[in-house]
Length: 234
Image (cartoon, rainbow, N blue to C red; front, side, top):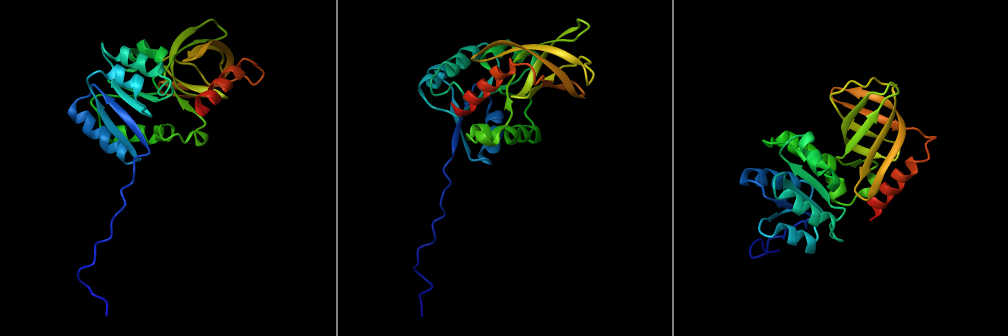
């Protein structure tokens, strides 16, 4: 008869985090919630405070959450010019989309709104975690915030902010009314992609957002496809 006592308990394997996200200049309450949400997807959070810019130049992270403020630009600059972090997923915290446009040259991928609320925070992490985990081939659209100029045939000009971009089109955030079916000319830049002008058509419209499908006959969209391929494979 086998002994029931004296046997060693089975060791439960600890799942190693598949990626790390740097948390820069965040309040304790924000750090705790973000840590909880990222952990659900196998992403470890690392508190980065002193010498944040220098650390992001030298240490590899898959993502970074940074509070938008006076010191944010130096940290973003350090990340985007670092060979190991130039394509990290960059989250902004606080402010609104318009304020985030001040940092558009750094290609913020997504924004957490303050005060952080668990449902919205978890939803955003769930929507972007595949990029953080480098599951690039399963992700056809790149979340990125940049300023987009939109011109309609009647000469109306609006400034919108991008939400996502793919090789076939992009979704934009704007309170301006641009009806579905409207032909437009859009102009934008994306990190290493210089400003590009494209023809397109508004394919859908929701409250404060709309989608533009690039004109398949516009050869300039190849530049966007090449940039996306490079971004995903880099």
